[in-house]
Length: 113
Image (cartoon, rainbow, N blue to C red; front, side):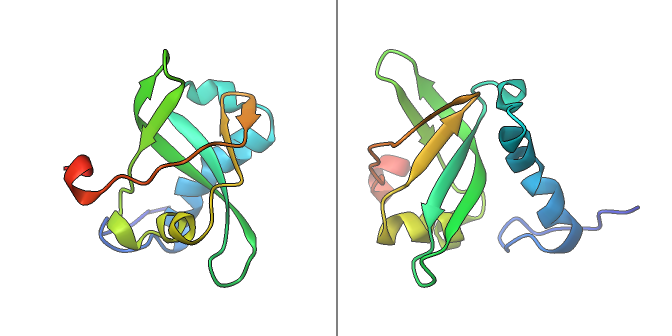
């Protein structure tokens, strides 16, 4: 089975989408601890549909003292989860087997640079 190519500037499709969605199943099966602090599972609300979505996101920085996680979109500001967070606050974040309702802050372009 070949994964083919995928341009990171576009939304993943087909088999790539399924591969990138595998961490969601690990969190659902209570195996999120296998991913350590490198990934979190973001539960968010669709900006138009109102549907609940779960998206695994790679953590860029984890400040243990402040209890903060910094994540970024690998596909830029057009990522659905990022646009959903601009419209509605995150519903839940899960790291390892711990879940909570986060206080979120979207960085400005200057801060993100």
